[in-house]
Structure formats: C-alpha cells, structure tokens
Amino acid sequence: MNEPATRDAELTRARILEAGFDLFVEKGFAAVSMRELAVRSGVTKSLIHHHFGTKEGLWDAVKEAAFARYYEGQKDELLAADAPDAGLLRNGVIRYFRFLKDNPRAVRLFTWMHLERDSTCSEMDSELVALGADRVRRAQERGLLRDDVNPTHVVTTFINACSQWFQTLDQHGSWEGIGSDDEFLEDFLKIFMDGLAPQDASASHQGITKG
Amino acid sequence: MNEPATRDAELTRARILEAGFDLFVEKGFAAVSMRELAVRSGVTKSLIHHHFGTKEGLWDAVKEAAFARYYEGQKDELLAADAPDAGLLRNGVIRYFRFLKDNPRAVRLFTWMHLERDSTCSEMDSELVALGADRVRRAQERGLLRDDVNPTHVVTTFINACSQWFQTLDQHGSWEGIGSDDEFLEDFLKIFMDGLAPQDASASHQGITKG
DNA sequence: CTAACAATTGACCGGCCGGTCAGTCGATGA
DNA sequence: TCATCGACTGACCGGCCGGTCAATTGTTAG
Image 1 (cartoon, rainbow over the protein chains, first blue to last red):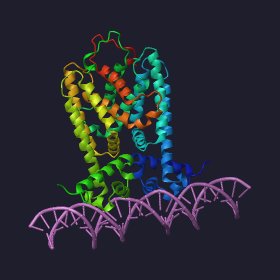
Image 2: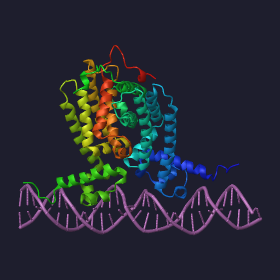
Image 3: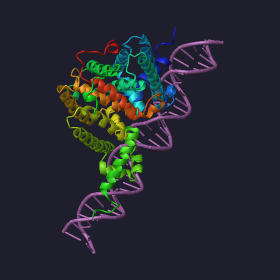
Image 4: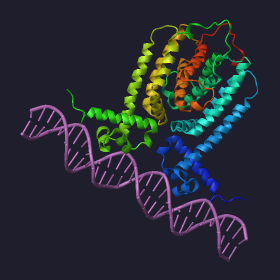
C-alpha cells in the first residue's frame, strides 16, 4: 500500500529526528555538527537540509517532537489522577517522579532548553504548574492540605525536587549514603506530605521549626 | 610599587577570566568562540592562548575560579551555622537559598557543568552533601528531627528544591500565582521543617498522607 | 645602558562549519 | 510509456573555527 523501505520520506525524517534527539540531548545544540548528525542518521547532510531547512530547523523539530510526547504523557497522568480522593497529591508526585525516571533524556533536553532560555519550555511548564496548583488549591479548600502556603509554591517544590534529582543522577554514585530513586521518593514523600498536612490548632511541633 | 596598568599579566588574566565567565555562563562552552572572548576581554586572541593555552584551558580556569569562590563561600556558610541550636537546619536552608540568590550566574555555570558531566562538580557537591547530611544525622540523634528518613535525602531535597528554583527563575514571570523568592522560601520552609518535625507517637496526621 | 625575558600583536594555517545547487534516481499517475 | 515530482546525492562555497608563530614592545635585573 505505502512506499517501500527505500525512499520513504517519513521514515527518513523519523531517523533524522531520532539522531538529532540523541545528539542534541547528549551534547547540546551548539556542540553538534550537521556532519555528525548525517553520519548518525545514515543519510547525507544535504538530505537533512532538504527535510528540515537549517540546523535550527532540525533542533526546533526535535524539541517539538519531544515536547508533544512529554506534554501529552504528563497531561494524561494529571488527568488520570482526577478522582478526588485524599491521596491525589501524593499520587501526582509519584506519577511525575516516575515519568522523569522513565524519560531521563527528556530531563536533559529540558535542561538544555532552560539554559538557552527557550520560551516553549516556560509555556508548557506554566500550564502544567497552573493545573497542579489548581488541584492543590481545591484540596486546601476541602481541608485536606494546610492552607497557609501558596499552591503554586507547593507544586514547584515537588517539581523542583524531583527534576533536580534526575538532573544530578549521574553523580549520585559518589554521594555517600544516598539511596535509590525509590528510596529517595519515599523519604521525600514523608517530608512533603507530612509538611503539608493540615495544621493542628494545638500547634505541637516546635523545637526545630523556629530559629 | 607594582607594575603599571599596561602590560600587567595578572590584570590581563583577570580580565580574560571575567570575560570567559560572562560568556560561558551565558551561552555555554561550545557556543563561545575565541574571537568573541578576545573582543570581550579587550585583548588579542593570541594573548588568551598565551595565558591559558587552549579554549579548554580557559574554560577550566574559569570553572576553577568560580568553584573556589563558591566552595569557599558555601563552606563558610556551613561552618558559620555550627552553633548547635534548634534552628540549625532551617538556617542552613536559608543560607543556601540566599547564596544562590546572590550568585545566580553560579547556578547557571554549575548547570552547564552538570550537563557536560563535569567531574569537579560532583566532587564538591559530594563533600557539601556529606557535610550537611552529617549535621542532619546529629540533629536526628538528638531527637530534633524525625529519624525515619535518610539524612542525605533530607539534604538533597532542599538543595534540589532551592537550586531548581533559581534555575527556572527566568520563567517565573509567566507562572500565575507564583510569589517572590522570599515568599517561596517561606512556604518551602513551612513544608520542609514541619515535614521533618519528630513524629508524634499519637500519629495524628492522616488523610492526605496515605494514598 | 643593555641583555634578557615576558607580555602582546597580527598575519597566517589547515580544517571544519552550515549551507547551496545542479543533477541523479525512483516511484507514481496519466 | 513517459512526464512529473520529490527524495536523495556529492561537489562545492565562503567564512569562521581553534591554534601557531615570528616579530615587536615594554619592563626589569644586572
């Protein structure tokens, strides 16, 4: 029905995109040359220009493709957690953490993009943060979470902690006493969820909390 | 007493180092050329080679200089908090946060280095994390902090949350409902410190904490 | 005063950079 | 069967890349 294996434009584009993703994620945009992109994708340099115009064009396409995947996946995750039970936030954190764990190269890609002040990143982040903050706000209104903290700050706190965990994953081997991904997640959840529990009127916890 | 303004090797090296810091922090190693480094520092390209050998040589020198500053400053901060009072961890977080706030370009530099898998980074991080974890462990032994969490995970949690906050600072303008640096710090400390408070035997907080 | 030395310069190098273009090749529709 | 169109190639371009080197200049020790 379709074109044969040779001269399949879609397949070629996909191969170039994959090579681009690999190399850009590994070395960053500026450190990758069109020549190595060509070698890696198994096509001619000219063919990359034919399909994507310029090096920036390919970079944009790579980002767009990765973004679509990430955004889609993450939105599904957030929507899947719509059931209004008490563990909503906890499950949200776990899902986000697992997503990052399953997509370590996405973490690298977004870090490169942040450093290059890519606007696409901030738009998506903004939407997801807003979505998460809304959930937190509703949980606060129901009395399920303490309400003396900014919902956006709650979301950014766990996003920050999880993202940076995987951003520094390479080095963890040399950090003495550090645990596995799941052990960190477990400890983080203890701190995070207990820290977010509704405050007792009988305000017990003193000691360390006040300097 | 010393050499005049012209032909001052130390001053020249310093100027080149500063230009290198500016440009590398802004665009990353690969995206900076020797020519623009020369223009920025107001000297000849050859002179940079004379003083630093290669482009990598300058990059190493820039990193080393920044590292020395960072490491020194941060160690001072940690040692300054040696008084064994109850707010030790809280003050540690505040000091770390303030350091990052005062040195936003260091945050960018270290992010570039992380992406390039620079080993120097991990060595310093490793030492600081170990130092912080030791403090947490001692606080746990004294019953000032909950002891059912890995001390290293406690330290990485706040380091991660703070670092990433400043790493994404550029975008915060478009995140609705987000507060200032200090407001975030305040909210983070509420969650973090209350989450780390010693557990009551009468374990009250249920609801959200269990999925 | 001058020899010695380091700081500094500008011309120059081969090579790789991103990008272009004329042309070949192969599938497809009339 | 053949014209058409797009996938694909390889030779080529000017320019910038990091780096070298011989020569000049300023400083300083003897």
